[in-house]
Length: 97
Image 1 (cartoon, rainbow, N blue to C red):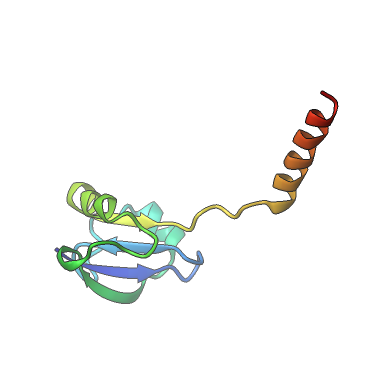
Image 2 (cartoon, rainbow, N blue to C red):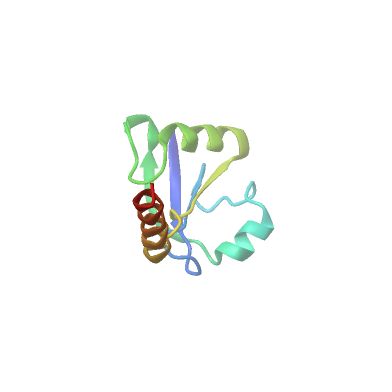
């Protein structure tokens, strides 16, 4: 299964996988408007891959078969300050026991 991978000029680390190069017919217009003008990154033969960098290979294949595209967005940014505050709160709670 050959597919084309495009990056977004508007959203960092956001990629769009489609079945055929430059064929965006199955991609909703609202998504394309948000994504920006797609910039071709590479062509990938998914049949020869065992895994992809950040995307789940099975999900990519399923999405391409079902809807004709797959959108890869970056993971949410971890808020280290909030995590630290929560950890400190837990430690305070165990000190009182």
